[in-house]
Image 1 (cartoon, one colour):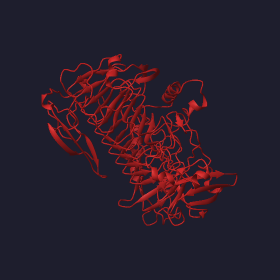
Image 2 (cartoon, rainbow, N blue to C red):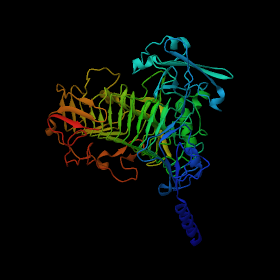
Image 3 (cartoon, helix red, strand yellow):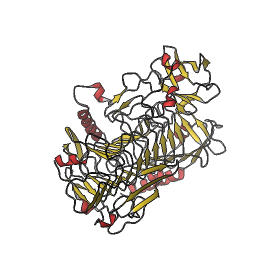
Image 4 (cartoon, one colour):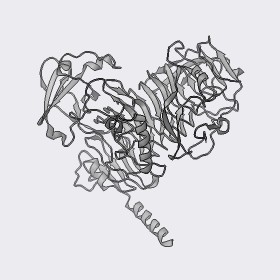
Amino acid sequence: MKKTVLSVVLISCCIVSHAKEYHVSVKGNDAASGAESSPFRTINRAAQAAYPGDVITVHAGTYREWVNPPRGGTNDDTRIVYRAAPGERVEIKGSEVVNTWTKEAGGVWKVVLPNSIFGDYNPYTDLIYGDWFNGRGRVHHTGEVFLNNRSLYEKETVDKVRNPEIFPDSKDPEASKYTWYCETDAENTTVWANFHQYNPNKELVEISVRRTCFYPEKPGVNYLTIQGFHISEAASQWAAPTAEQIGMIATHWNKGWIIENNVISNAKCSGITLGKEYSTGHNVWLADRSIDGSLHYIEVTFRTLRNGWNRENIGSHTVRNNEIFACEQTGMCGSMGAAFSTVENNYIHDIWVKRQFDGAEIAGIKFHAAIDTQIRNNRICRTGRGIWLDWMAQGTRVSRNLLYDNDLEDLFMEVDHGPYLIDNNLLGSPVNVWNMSQGGAYVHNLFAGLFRITQEKNRYTPYHLPHQTDVAGLSIIRNGDDRFYNNLFMPVEPDRKIDRGQPVYDSGAYPNFLDGNAWYHRAVPFGEEKHFVSQPDFDPGFRVDDRGKEVYVSFAVQGLGGIQTETVTTERLGRAKMPKAAYEQPDGTPIAIRSDYLGQSRSEHPVPGPFEQVKDGEIQLKVW
């Protein structure tokens, strides 16, 4: 025993004494030492040199490489840190510059590229595909063309490049007239693009050539920090939950990464993936249509369990303070690998803007099996669907998020059994929640849109032992077993028709629990509620004022002084029916909601909604 302890101490001392800082510069040399006075040229060279406890500092410039780290740290205290030098703009790009275009006619230019420049991966022969992907009847390549850091729209024929028309589904119609098309033979790849008034040989024109920017080829690379970079323009593939998920930053079935203070943009599909790896299944439903995709995913779930999916090995990532935009599938997604993670203070916007393809995996944040995952203090807008928690959201908490201007809905809870907690959120889109789950707790939220509630009796989905990945059982979704405490309901468009609303709970199998809610502007109360306010003729006039870096909301309330409310705690919320598990912290300690969206303390009899300072009358608040 003494020998073992001594060995551990000696190993730890060796790690600490080895800790070094390596420098990388666009003016460096990979044959150098990596010292500040003798920096490496590539980040990958520094990655080969770094061991647990080391720091890689990358200096200003653009690095066109796939960073493939061979090793990680051993714990939080001896992680390997990749960081942009403080105060310096450092870009990692999945693209290369092309400035050898030949003009054809009008705004159309052409370039012929030898296939040899792509090495073993040519994104102009690689088609987007995967389980639950919908190409809308045409092919889509993972490659992309960028004009001054904005992607053009791929077309099916060269004629559609020469005669561009506005793409009607685009959220940026004028931009959709900037188009490109490609053809590839055994020797060359030819690209045509319509740059309109721009000369591509005088502007910054790039084409994506790498499938990712930061991704370890192998699992077992834990405890990395990626800090302060601008990461963009990779040819990322569709990230289905049944596939190896490779975004521009991808954790690859590892543990304990910190991804912070980065600007992530222009992924063909996904910006960040916290997802599964290849061996447990890769687009298995496409490979075998003899059974339903949900059955395939159940099989994938059990394969990941046999492959070490648990708190000790996988997940526990921190993703914070990033800006993520201009990705056409997700800002962030993860199947299994997002469990036990924290996602906070991110600004995710303008996802799925081009809308040339769609599928069942598109959102600002799309997680499967977000077990004990904490999603808090994020701003998510113009993403189609804001947050989508699909299958096995258990112990999950969505708290203090600002969601608005999402044209599908702010939050989609799909086939989850709880317990999950949605508290202190500000949801401002026309449809706030699509609830196809049970066992949820909605507490102190402001709902400025509508609810859509549906049952799912055709899919059996897993629930787990508390705070574990071990599967306790499978069940269908029969609706109910939800809690609604101290919320404000003030739909801006109360007459907008959706296929189902809250009264569908009346036909649900399980009872709901309600108290302390305020219902305005024809919001329809449901169930038995002892203390509440219902003023169907009162329009609070809710609106969001997006000023770029700052966001304000304004609305009015009345009648709140007459509601008797109580603090919401673990004890009051009880246990979710199917998993028989409590609404509590990931470490098993109780929850008491004693602060609001702004971090202010709540009184013993708190005000409904996310803001404790609200009183009857009009109010304007800065919320970001």
